[in-house]
Image (tube, rainbow, N blue to C red; front, side, top):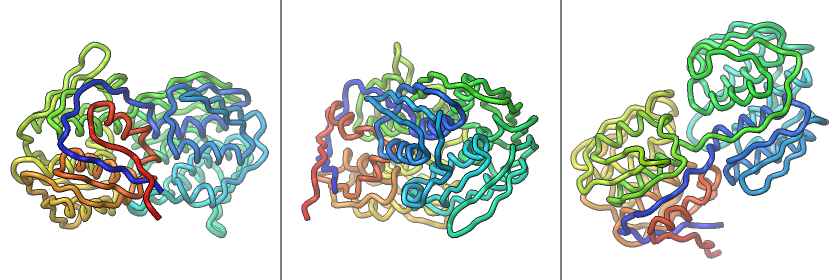
Amino acid sequence: MDKIVIRGGERLIGEAGVSGSKNASLPIFAASLLTEGENLLHNVPRLQDIQTISKVLKNLGVKVHGEGNTYRIDATEVTNEEAPYDLVKTMRASILVLGPLIARLGKARVSLPGGCAIGARPINLHLMGLEAMGAKIELRSGYVEAKADRLKGATISFDTATVTGTENLMMAATLAKGKTVLQNAAMEPEVSDLANVLKKMGAKIEGVGTSLIEIEGVESLHPTEHTVIPDRIEAGTLMIAAGLTRGNIKLLKCPFRHMETVILKLRETGMEIEPEGEGVRVVGTRRIRSVDVKTQPYPGFPTDMQAQFMTLMSLARGLSIITETIFENRFIHVNELQRMGADIRIQGNTAIIQGVESLNGAKVMASDLRASASLILAGLAADGVTEVSRVYHLDRGYEGLEKKLAGLGANIRRVKEEG
């Protein structure tokens, strides 16, 4: 098992490219199930989650071939309708094959999902929507078993905005009979990227990027070519790395327009963030100002940036409050930050952070994907050496993060853990 070792104190300077979005790539891979023929996808990040969704598709009979950041996916022959527990348990996004399988084959058997330990993320809204579209659904032995001769259009109102629920039902609706209306749909850029791919495939979708999406079902879709959008969470993580180290970096392929709320909050801390040529210039400040944050669905502050922002606030002047409204267990990185000297108190879904003068290097353990990033960020700013173990979480969502940081001047390396 790998760990990442960081000697803090180096100022980050230089240029780094932002990789393709994990959360956009995964549903687009699932969408390939809706077509016969070869889909060509560019700017796909090399991540463990991409390997997992590839295995799920291959298990269904789909041909998946990746070379660098380009993937060819051919679902002409879908020979199996089951996504087994052994694959789905490692990544909850595997549930995204449910809607396309029912739309394409009229049946699906998909294991209930697993993934990061950041709280219960039920799929009841997915199932409610599919039932409204005429699917017969049973939960049996840990699997969702669904059947439908052909899905029918329906009006579906989500009680709470759900990204994967919106994506699953949007994909299912593309081949349904009649019109489907999704109310209170998720508005994340990754949802819009999927919708744009589906439209390239021949789907009829209106309202992309809004909370009201309308899909007129068609008889069939065709394969397409697409370049995945850059990853706004990776971009935000690198911005905070610059902020913590008083750095001066330029991010290439940065999704600036998808990051308005994050950038506004980072500017409030004293950081300078401005477009520059084909990139974005990010300059840290000597005195980080404390800023309060409340996570919200897009276009609000993303829950996937909460842990990283907490690390930044650990070294800010004064008191800051972070409120987590999306996932109930997303403060499990706090104990590790406290081991490094952070002054953080938890009250329910609120973290109260009193900024300290410095953090100290320590041996810490990652508990989920974004927590791993927050600990690496802390290590960049800490005095001494920080060792972050269980970084397989990091590999699920960041493409060579330690290499990018090293390229900017960080003293960071990946090593094998002994024993």
